[in-house]
Length: 178
Image 1 (spheres, rainbow, N blue to C red):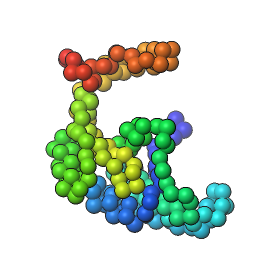
Image 2: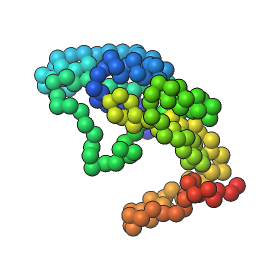
Image 3: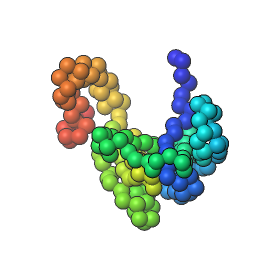
Image 4: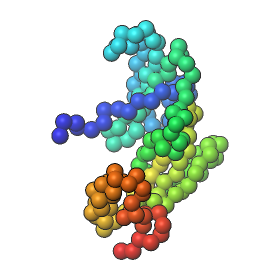
């Protein structure tokens, strides 16, 4: 394999300082690096920016750019807001519930927990409007095997019909049996 993992994932933010403080406070991510330039290194465009990096755990880095000379940021209006999101793992259902309580206590609107059978998750937005998810994996090896067994069949069926295949509907309809 050519790739060895994700070096970092970068998004735009409205305010770099606010973003760092929000992620530190609500998700306990450590602020690890800031880079600021008046010219983009790759394109040489004159475009001042602040690029901040946060430790998302497990060797994963989440980064943001504040771009003060660009038009205000917005999302892709042709894509529903639930589609584009970042999902972070938590180590227990209790941690998920504690995070929800902490976020709601600070005035953050939280959806969930949502039961996806193989994981449970909550959803919320950061100050720049990025949708975030915290997820606790709770699937069994039998569940994962069942999903692995149908993945190619589902993909082929979708490619031909553009209708949702039902091979894994058990994840959300409550019919999973061991």
